[in-house]
Image (cartoon, rainbow, N blue to C red; front, top):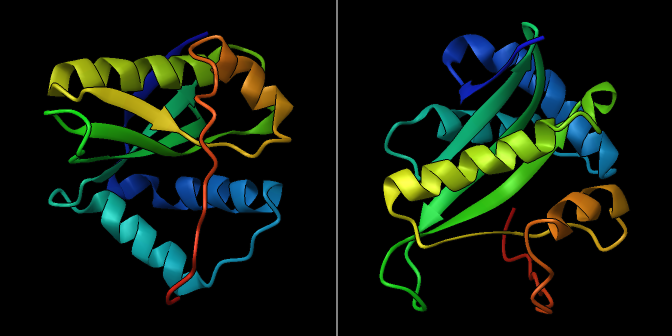
Length: 149
């Protein structure tokens, strides 16, 4: 059984959209179609700081990690923010989430990014078990104010 992690291409759009809709359903979120289209366009734009890595297990799209790099006031080099990590349910518990995070760690090293960070829902105990094997939560609380759609 083989696992490949790679950048998405235009040909991956339908598969990514299927996973994206499962991800939104997991978090009980509805997004307008134009938001999803804008996200995909950003992911495919080489000038965008946002990218997506796909986990392909035995030829099937099993999950994704959407990330972006950005400057920081706390370090000289850029940070990498893991914005969205998702695995199809039947692929959970097989090391693929770990492989996606390890892949991002390697991208950080390759690109000279200083830190990798992410958020998750407090109640997402399955994901938190994995995340806690890397680093414990830093105790920060997120505040998010919607300004526009």
